[in-house]
Length: 187
Image 1 (spheres, rainbow, N blue to C red):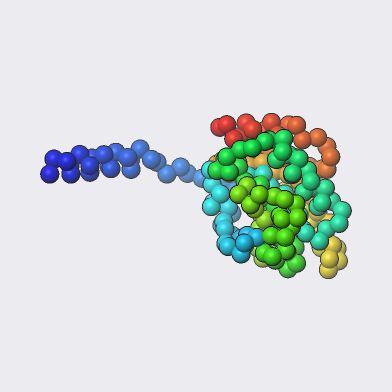
Image 2: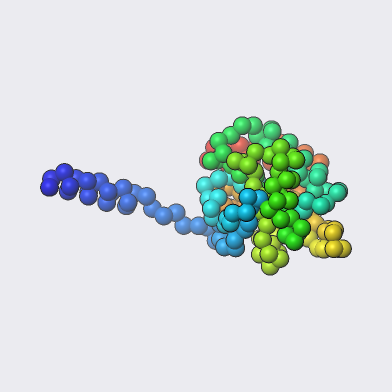
C-alpha cells in the first residue's frame, strides 16, 4: 500500500511538471488543414511540432524557378550538415496538387536524392494551399494549365512554429539562413 502511494504521488508530480505548452497565435501549428505526404499518409503541421521547419512552395512540373529553389534547399541542407531528424524537417509544399500526386512527389524526392527522414513533400486542396500560402507570405497564380507564377521564398520556422527567418529570391546568398537554422536547432 505504501509503495502504491509513492507511485501515485510520483505520477501526479510528473503530470503537473509537464505543462502543455500553448501555441503562439502566429505559429504555423495553428494551420489545422490536413496534408497528404509523398507516401500517401496524412499529416498536419502540428504533427511536426518540436522540429525546425525549412519550407518552400514549388510544383514538380516547373522548368524554371522550382528546380533552382530545390537545388538551393539542397545546398542549405548540406551547409547545415547532418542533424538529428528529430530536430529538423525540410518541407516542400505543392502549389499544384492536381499534378503533384503522392507518386509524383515521391519520385521528385527520389530523383533529388532527398532522405525522407528529413524531407517531406506535401499537398492539399486548393483552398488549404491558398490559406497556407497567405500565412507564409507566398504569392502564386496559375497562368496556364501547366504553369504558375510564384514567389521564391524559403522560410525557417522555430521549433514552436513561429517564423524565424525568410529569404526571398534565388541565388541571393544563404549564409544568414543557414546560421538561423543552426541557431534554431540549438534552442
